[in-house]
Length: 314
Image 1: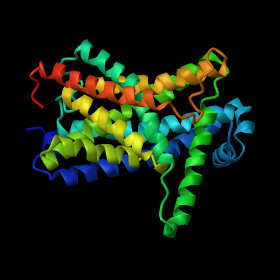
Image 2: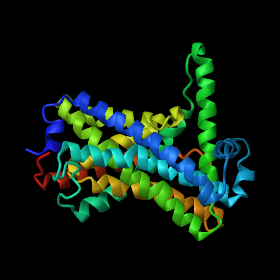
Image 3: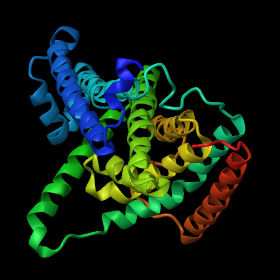
């Protein structure tokens, strides 16, 4: 038995998750500090905290300074690697060195990948509806101060997102596809579905509990209360796609194309190719939401039936 395997053998799943949490916090801190150190030689910026504050209070002014925007994107890139990617890879090595704990090498069926992409496209109106519902939620009067803080944090995150989605050049689109679509899809799926969900299943002995608890953690870790419900449902959807397909590339690809599609739509709207503005909070007709919901259920059932034909033991 290798030493790496021994590190996790017989260890309670809760302790394993604590190891993973410590690694995530540690590498997030290290990579954030490294990123802040590198912004000066790379972008000529010495006060990155001030740039971050200005991005929230005066995003239009920051948008005019390409170096400042790129510095913020670079910090986002570094924090994603530190918080999600590195801990997930290290944990997988500790859990099953030399093996395929993350399930990246199991047989990948193109039919399941294509169906997962269709599901994410069809479910979008329903998810948008849940976002509108989430926006209407209010905390009891006792927690007015807490709600105000959450609203302010949500507004700040929204302004930063809008700043990132300003893409005057094709190179900006390419950078955003990496930063907002590709990197989060790979790093977050490795950590949440690849590591946390599998350890949760080991702990609870129930895949449905594992999927939904992981989805709660996935949504909570983004610290956006008014987007908690839709992100929770997306996390659960990704969890079931992973469970049914048995291959982590399925949720990774679906996650990447979901995020990437929003980036491309924002780019097309900015340059006048389409009128639809993805950042606008425009309610959808009820019949669209109903059709989206019904078709999503049918497609999910079809996905499960198709994946069952693989006789994959999970």
